[in-house]
Length: 111
Image 1 (tube, rainbow, N blue to C red):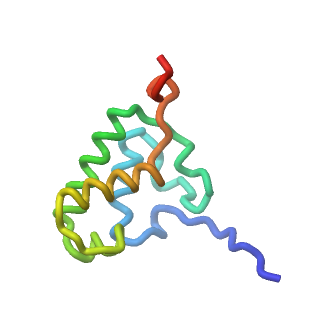
Image 2: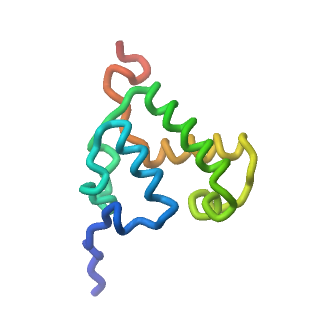
Image 3: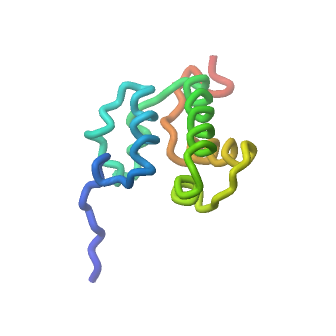
């Protein structure tokens, strides 16, 4: 019987392409990026940010992907497409899948 590997994955265990992204993401919410176990299924729910903070991070990530070179884009997105449209979409998908949750008062319909 195979047991699930429960070995934690921390910042130091991430590859050189992912480290700057996680560090920047954590910096924006004052999260201790070196202490988060990124293998936890809900690690990205530990902190929250506003919709504007998320948009600012998306813009940063899109630019990082655009100027970061072919190997970076391939490692993060799976492709080497250097276009602003593609890096914007990739940054948006990254935030959708791994971004911090939105602060409750910033969610659509809650005011």
